[in-house]
Image 1: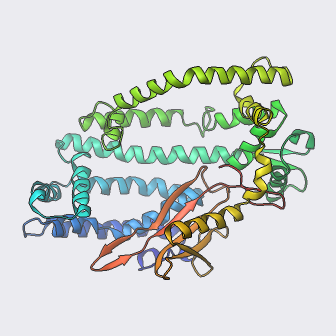
Image 2 (image 1 turned 90 degrees about the vertical axis):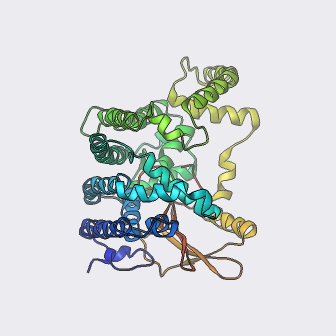
Image 3 (image 1 turned 90 degrees about the horizontal axis):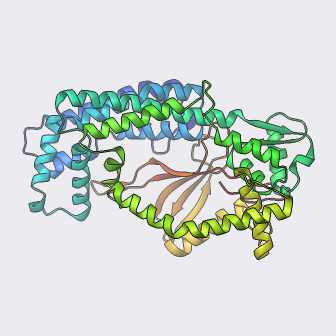
Length: 455
């Protein structure tokens, strides 16, 4: 039996095999289509309940499968998962278009929207109605048939290109490994960072030495503290040229195609540019406001930035005779200058900010501010042994949420940090369904001497 097609509360990671995903997607899409058809075939007059609310609760199984799969593709991917993502993304894009371009469904949504002032809706219901109507009107529901067809083509191609872009970045990040056996190359690096590099080397099968990679916990400390300018340069150029080398992992053509498709899509929908389309629903509202804000910021900040850069240039020349300050010098000399001017050294603080200490501190603050209590548990299935799982309660021991915490970099995880969910929160028929939330980061694992290092 396919575990993704059974009812489950927490995601059954240990039971899921890669071959389960595509059949699960196909069946869930089929079921969701049937739910949409039940709305459009309803002969009763359109109401908030039988149209907007019914639409909101369609495809719940598909949403769960998607959240499990695409979170894995971000945090614990492999070639098989990436191949499946390339196959199912166009299917999901097509299904999304089938909803927003469904004329009968849009008629029902539009009918409810036209009556909204007389429906006595709550704030939440009004918000949902507005968002649902805009999801149709902003994504092609009013287009002619030939333009709808082109919109489908654009969305299908874009979905694959965006996945390929991310895959190439991850592959390039994993590809670079600098094995160091001469400790002089680590001169200036804090003890904690050196120990982490030694542990990384051992995890990569090296009996001795240290390993540097382009993952943030490895890259940033070296750029900030290491004296070896040539190796800083090598790392900086490798980091800055990820997927930009004209090889099989090159993203230049992907970026150009994505930009062109976004521009064409925006034009199809009646917008001048992709920026006009995106900003319409955001606080800035228009590209003109963004440009105005940035120009005003530039006018006020540039003089100070020039003064500070000149100060940094002079300091680097005085300290090490550097005639031309380069990109790979800025973090290093900024840290040195900060220590000279303010006697401030982040390394003196880091022993107090071991990841475990920070987690405990954050949980304590959450309890004081919001009455939340985090109980680490071992009976929740997880997708990697490093993931920590918690049940979250309020002060009266009412269940609030499940929380997954995934802190450390590895080959299958993309860079950066993000919050996501494996199950959404909602209320229906008097039931308050609680969310399953995940935080994904890329911190250096604690060593005997360390520390929480910037992501």
